[in-house]
Length: 288
Image 1 (cartoon, one colour):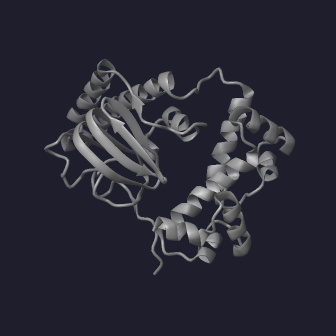
Image 2 (cartoon, helix red, strand yellow):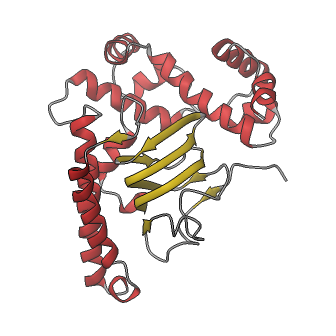
Image 3 (tube, one colour):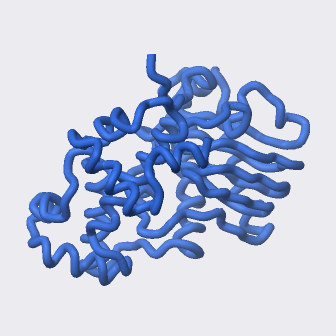
């Protein structure tokens, strides 16, 4: 049987669609620690972290993410990650299944045109969002969540927490809003389609057709917004998934190529080598 990248959900941690956990130095070795002790893996849910103090270091899709409190950070579904360090942590971790995350929150983080980094904020703001998490935690009981009315109350509190989390990011880190230009909206729609279709659609022309525009207009618009051509973003989505499979599974290069939608594995190898300046095998050997 071929090894795959483990993907975890909340079924082993919670009977509900979300999980709220208070973290401090006394609970960091708890069995339901949602950030550490799983090794390299993906999650099918979101993890929103409100860190009042302490030091966290993680690997997220081959990049080291480091935060020292007070700070916010999140891990999105599908990102390959591993906890590397948790030192004197105090704060809240909230894991939420995608179907329970409001569309506005999902679109904000999933459709971001920039890399999402930890957000460092002052203690007053951290206290406000921590208070919201604390109130949410008080509703996180079997008795309350077992009734329809109780679950609706908990969901409202969860939405308040996620709304505050997103608002702070929107004010400090990522430009996203209803007054976006047509170019920004189009570029975001293009990025969404890539994440959904990159295994089957490989050229800007195919995406332009789905968006009912010309290839030239798509390429020009995406370059204007991001500084990179449309083909770059298609290749980047393919490349990051290829890296995940090369390092975190024992699939052969040929099998990785097929997994990514390439019937000609030699073409995939040439493309990877061109983009990464090393062959798939060399990349695998270097990172394993």
